[in-house]
Length: 438
Image (cartoon, rainbow, N blue to C red; front, side, top):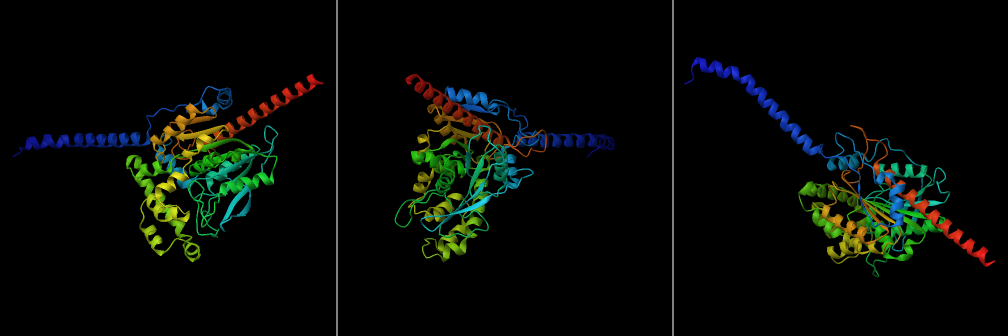
């Protein structure tokens, strides 16, 4: 048994023990916070992979944001999860509301594609007419905050903007055919499913309405896959196109969905959340999909949809059937830009983030190899930024414009001026030749 003296000694040591436990607990919490927020990670300049060409040298000189440090908000900006979550929840800070005109395009199979057109708010620095044709991320449209912020900024830099609204994404727009958007914006061409490219229909409209305009193709996340696939499918799709910029895409739908089944970086949890969002979107059009006589989606399919917990299950039970694919593998293979992107010959900027929890690092081997082999491709990889975040700021509060917004416009401006100089040189050469002949 403890003597009174021992009890007194033990009692006097208790406060010190509790203080030590408190310090240990605080230290543990701080360690977890530092690790989770990735606070020890240094801010660095993006890694740029490209061939040593005159164009690439010019771009690196004309785009200082590609070579200077990207500095995210100090307290949380080095966490890819928080960057992604903030983008997903809020989109952007102090979002402007650009005023556009909605256009409706009837498609061959009865679908109605829509896009919003925003005129430039000033002259472009080259004096030329330039239109950005923009493809948003999965299930997104022109009213999303990140799109509004980017469009407003681009308008002020002299760009006209056309933004595709993914089929079925607009909350107040009913479907007029029994299908919705797809990963690559294409349909397996059969008698029942005539080909209908919504992004291509928007681009064709812009070319008809503004025959003198030059095009800049911009794709965000899933939209990057659609944009690159569209350009690579047919060489004529690259006519009047100055360049293409793709941000945070995954390049291969098949490989991307396989990585979504892994728990690494909480990817399985993101898969569950994205599947829930997709489920809500499809079910919001339940009446339209079931009531159309040409629909190949029935009550049984919708029951499977309600039970789905992953995007692969939704794609297999619903999405591939919308577009006439016989198997999930066929759907993913045909919809992925990885099989077409090597056909793109215009200047192409591919942007990804190392800490993107949705795009597995193994997928980044695709743009890395492209940039090493193709002189028109520049691959830019940031250390931080998450998925579509790229917020900038000092300590806590992010700025309204992100690093991503500014880089796209800076790169595009540089390409526009490069093209202007090339045309001037060609014109000068032709005039010299003409005067010499006379």
